[in-house]
Length: 429
Image 1: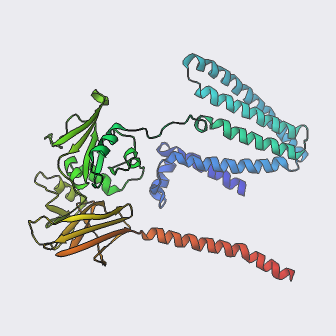
Image 2: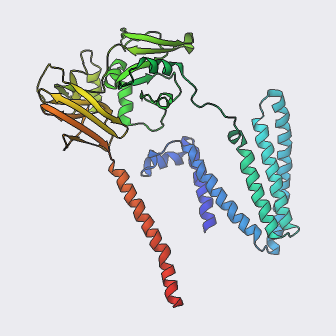
Image 3: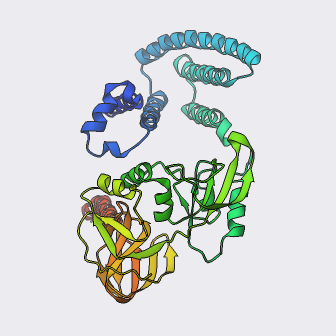
């Protein structure tokens, strides 16, 4: 039964690995709960590799056990077919090797040659067991050596790569670090001119990155909101881009200072400091209500929209109109903790240039305060007049729940493991 289970697992994993080329993946994607959370269907090949490894272990167990005469006879017949296949594979390896010397590409030749070598080694192992019984310990050692050689040689192109600098020094980042105030809080916008996460490695916050998992609202925000509004709402101070001039989505120039230029033409990399100071936190005294995110993003794209004066929300909020500039300062900024100090002359809405991701909780002057989604993406808090110390902490309940379930599972495993020992001890007494 175990053998057939792993055969079925290997077959299903192989069929899913074809993705949308076969109907099975689409069926799993739409009908199986939770399956659409995962990405890259070709990674289901891991299921195939794991199942084949288990089947190979079962095969090794049979091979090292006592073999009846009929099984030996069956092995001899299989060895003949495998030998024919190895000869054909050897011819193919020789042809591909010749073609590789002509074209300069040896990838297929190397893989085919290695497959031929290990198939020949497999035939030798089976022949030793089928035609001439050998000590099973020697055979087991030979099997382990075969597996080790297989793993080492197949992956040698990856495992034996020469050391290299993953994130070499970037001139745009050096220009930004030399220009920026060390105490300033800002982000940079990389328009596909820096290696992914290079800014993060340099200690700079950036908009975007190369993570494969994206928040849907953030992706919609990036696609639908004009870039100059995004820069304002996302605290962008520096821009690393391919653009020789900085302009808004209507083609109007945006005031910016050129700090650095690398290369020319299509390969050029320009680094700018935007003239307008985009904040990480600010207070507004005017709100506009829109029913859904699409309507909110449309409001953000309106020519008259001013993100420093107006906030767009999906439910009414009580604020008092006030033209005064309310002082806001960042007291502490960590990936999982944010402290902001503010002093309001009239009730208003504090807007934070932080994605409203689940798991964040807020308090104002030590009292819990609900977080409001602002501009279809950001976090906000309604504040009364007077001084306010705002603390936001990332403590997702899902992590606590997952930890509790894990501890419960470990506890159950310990009980199941110890219970037979306890019963055995009673029998002995």
